[in-house]
Length: 119
Image (tube, rainbow, N blue to C red):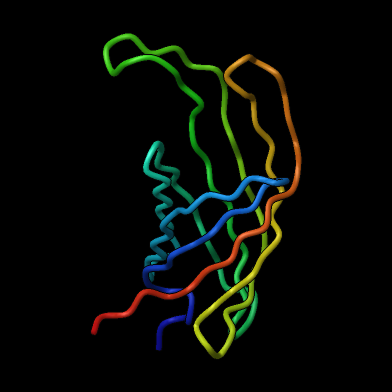
């Protein structure tokens, strides 16, 4: 039986007073794809229990067009979550990033996920 995290999730990310929506797609082999519309991050997850997971994701910070891009650094996010019986999760995650101005930033985000199911 697959871990309860496997599948497609609508996720709300809160950072300070800002909130944005992303899609998480947890694959059975321990990979996760995170699509925020303006960027895609790749990640890995592993079970920490029957309903718990640890996640790490990584994305490059770039500006410009496809042909004229400027690389600024990486954003790494890591955290743990537990999938609730109602197919939701809430997790706090730590991030370490270089912003587009070249400044190193660290902090915490809150993620709230809701499973997407076929009807």
